Image (cartoon, rainbow, N blue to C red):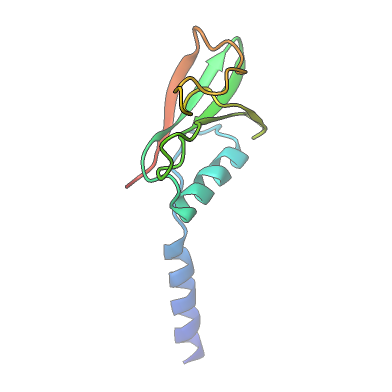
Length: 113
């Protein structure tokens, strides 16, 4: 009986963990942020994008699904907040982002509905 309960507990725990399928080399803190957003259900659609500009890597997360005028958020590869490149009432973000012209953009994760 104890073994059956232990097996059920293990299976339940494993099924509750969603694998975050992102490219190799994605920082673990970025993966953790994606997992947290999936778990909370705050991001039901949108894509996490990796931007590389002048040798610097950034990750842009979409605004939460329930917020119309929320900002997208950009983090560096150490998960430090950098700025809001878009969103808000004007759609132009926080206007304090580094110059992203010429950035190489790669989608690394798509939130499921």
